[in-house]
Image 1 (cartoon, rainbow, N blue to C red):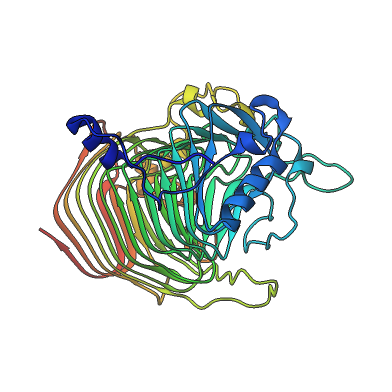
Image 2: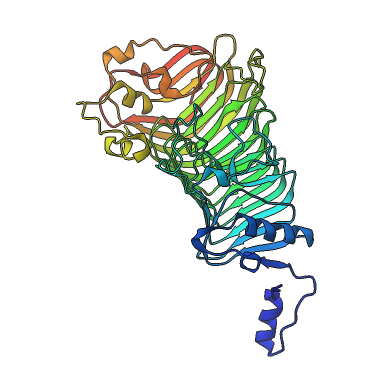
Length: 477
């Protein structure tokens, strides 16, 4: 097997003219081409890549190297103490044949089916690194969302799924074109995403970027994410997400750059997001949603710039009550949502560009030529919305040093609108329709503080800036 020269020793040898020495404890390297992999874009290399991983694991761990080339694979399973390292020019390509996605030994996730390209279960010390590409090739043409075969819905595999793993590192790799969700981690711990690039936009339905379900101790930093669906999405179908830090990321999404929910049975505790740029996100930017019980608390979001986004901040406490179990008769109790701080935000809210809205080929849309702005467009470019439900208040939310510019366009009829409670509905702000205020709509809440919050209009609007209903202790400084 190849060995790797210690960079420090090599540098010293070159400087001082000595012969380089090798470290006996250097990491073992396993090249997939030594196990029969062929990077011709045509050969199915699942068996060769899996043999490489298994051999590396059996040797006590090391580096599984993907050299330059296009290596087509079906489902592979990573194991403990493995570094999957992709050279510049290396690509792992997902097969376009669902038969290559074996589910043998794969547990069913609590949401969706088990099929995925890369899988790990009960493993630790796994790294995926390098300058290469992992491309699921899961376009709407290869894996359509609904296509009946023998009365069954077509299967769309995830790009990556890891269950109950710990000490995970994702560094440098570009991820592209999943058929379903992208990077899905369930009940994992001690996770680090660094300088990852995600390119999922306008590829297929449900192309989430990073989905963290019940994960703890997570750092996501310096990543560049352009997703079709939710980009950085915290879920909690069973256990809470806690101790999550996001910083220095550029994020764009058709749905939301940052979402906590909708799966929220376990809740979200101690989440910090700072110094990020959210852009080109027509369905909203920051969404904090607790609708399946649990606790959402101690959330700190700061230093955010938003450009060309829809509804800028949506905070929702609801009562969908899903338990994500097979027993549909069970219903989770209403949870608690409190202690949220959002500061140092600059945002420009815009109405979605119709050409862009129709640009996703998988949707098969035509450009809407309706004159003016439709109610649906207006509802997606609405105000801050903070809303609980009757008898269950959102508590202790502070907005400080926030500047948001809105497009305007509200009419006198809009100002008279009655907003439905939609207590049990899937939580998306535009489902509530056009709101009767243009700056902020707050309902069923307690101890809400706006400190140096500057809300402005770029056009005329007949609605009031603020609408408050069943709010105890609103402070505006």
